[in-house]
Image (cartoon, rainbow, N blue to C red; front, side):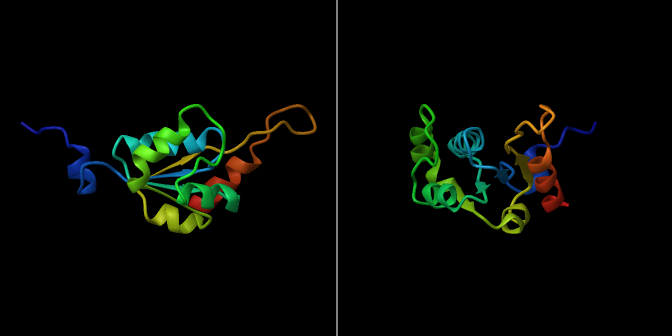
Length: 120
């Protein structure tokens, strides 16, 4: 009888490495929580301030408990402005970018599309 594969068997380690594109109000907490849970995480953002803050161990945005999660997962968390570096260094990529309204009042997916193109 064949048994189910574990993540360790698939990726050769206990947990896959993750990248999070977008380090704003949603992406930074997501990256920090994953790092706290034992995942190695690379955050990506075009905003150098966000990247530098995270690499220095500081919360790049004001969110409840974010600093605590960054402190807890800091050994497994880094950030970069280099999308290719992050994607090639990780197994799974999450795109957590803004979807602002366009001139018609509809959500714009331009940042999402840019992230997908960079992955492709």
